[in-house]
Image 1 (cartoon, helix red, strand yellow):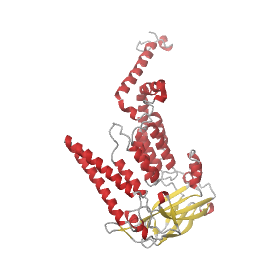
Image 2 (tube, helix red, strand yellow; image 1 turned 120 degrees about the horizontal axis):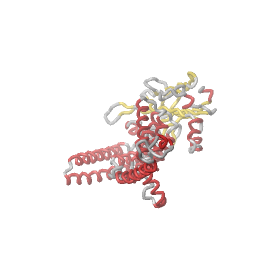
Image 3 (cartoon, one colour; image 1 turned 135 degrees about the horizontal axis):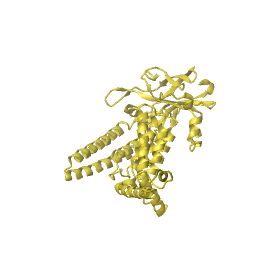
Length: 442
């Protein structure tokens, strides 16, 4: 073979004719597809296309044979991107992570850890209260691509249950759906999912339903414990014994609290707020809040406790505007503003403190995640009218047990009228809204 042969593509440096080389590569790709399909018998758990008669034979071949042959290459690329994303995470560069998550899931849509981690960063680490819809949309994509396992149903349920959303009504059916699906290895969903079903019921005031759910959990754990004893599997014996005892403890606590709180609604308490808002600079407000009628709180161990006050500053009609653009999340982040501070302490003297100071700072002049972003990207302040919301909501998870002891499971111990408002599932809260103009903020 001459150099001219190589230049014109009639051969290779090692003497293998190019047509043979192409044929060999094609055979290898087919072989990879066959081997990958054999090795990965459980990939159907991830892929909703598998065994879907509506897609037809050609679609099934295209997605599951040829796709499998390419899978190794795609997964390697996805893995490399994931390593880079992990590096950015450990450097605290959360903003730069999101494009990597999208690329990884594009290359390998069955990377459930990437979906859950990406949603976590969007909801928590970026410090942007507007991003929950983007986070849930990312999880919806993950669920669509991995609908036969429990993981992402649970992740979305948890996100809606926790403080970024606190939507217990939306979280419950996701926990219930998660409990129906297996793990990636085909084993049943973990029992803590059914724990969350009971916890979500409690947050809706469905205490009897939650007690029944805990009993169902106990019965299941006892059955598994009996199986483990028969097989003499010491690890499983200890595991299911602990699971049974945890569920029993939760059921007993609910029964005790149900009895202790029976009279809360019969003796309602009227709680109100007064507030003073002062501008201390462009995009910087100080809010001083006092509560009236808030009782001293004590937990079950006799220790003093404190309620939590939430403060939100957002565009007037924020929820309406966000709903109108639910399919255009970029519009929301470019045009709407939402500042949220949720752990402000209601002291025994009625003063509300933030980081031990008797004033809540509304700091829209800096990046809340300390990522060096322009504050105007997070708080664009494009409207002329805003509202500052002060809210005390007994049912939310961040409130200590002592709050529910004083005000009931979902705030049924709050006196009606005044600043008391009704929320989801008939829950009661205290809320004060203060209108603001753009000039009050800038």
